[in-house]
Amino acid sequence: IKKSEDAPVERVYIEISLRSVICLYLVFIVVCERSSSVMKILIVSALVLGVAVAQPQRRPHSYYDESQREIQKNQDYQPHSDQQYQKNSVQDNSAQNYQQTKESNQYQDNQVRSKHESTTFIPIIRFDKEQSEDGSYKASYETGNNIIAEEEGYLKNLGPDPNAEGETLKSQVQTGSFSYTSPEGILINVKYIADESGFHATGDHLPTPPPVSPEVQKGLELIFAGIRAQEEEDARHLKDNPQDIGKRPEYDDGQYRQ
Image (tube, rainbow, N blue to C red; front, side):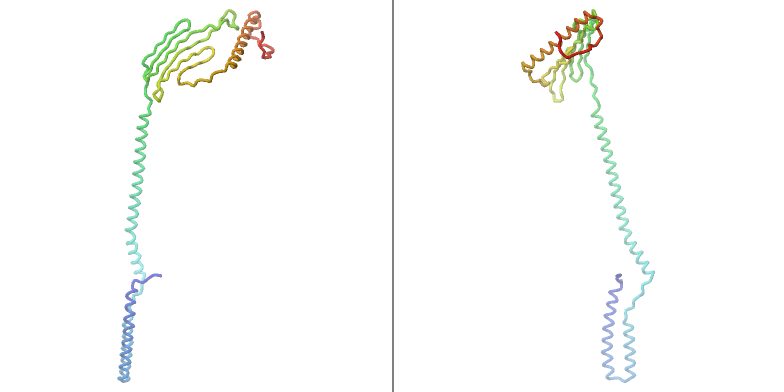
């Protein structure tokens, strides 16, 4: 329901009209008792005219008035819209500036991190090596981050070669040691040997295997002794029967021959 802007004024006019009618009615009663017919007609006419004059003069609403009212509302609303637009623009600019600043800081952090994480050059302070004609050698080196290593090697004679008559088997033996500082600041020392039985390293930082019981040790010695006896028997057989060199045995029951 649309309230009229002239409602308070109309209410006042109505109150004045009612009061005027009541007053004129009272005057009419008093005068009628004392006046003639002509006077009564004049009084009635005056009463009707007074009531008509006392009625509120309402101006009819027109399309022009509605248009003016809509224009005024739009003008009143426009500052709020401009303020909201400016507020949103400020917020958008603030968010954009924050994002650009964040990306710039992240890029700078990545640059600094990449600079610190770059590989550090470690120089070789010392390197020595001696090589002999018989296959033996000695080598040692030291680096700028306190790594020291030494190694020497030679050829070990393992006996006659069963696959080549008149030849001997040889194995490369390497022994050495190296030391370095762990990330915890502990000095690590390692000694090692590599021969026909494999690579063996010792050091205080390495775990120690549990001791082998005498019974198991005795069994291992018997197994290794049987393997060596089998190899010696095969070598004698091939020496006496050179035509069997390179041939595979037709049947092997897995038993050691004596």
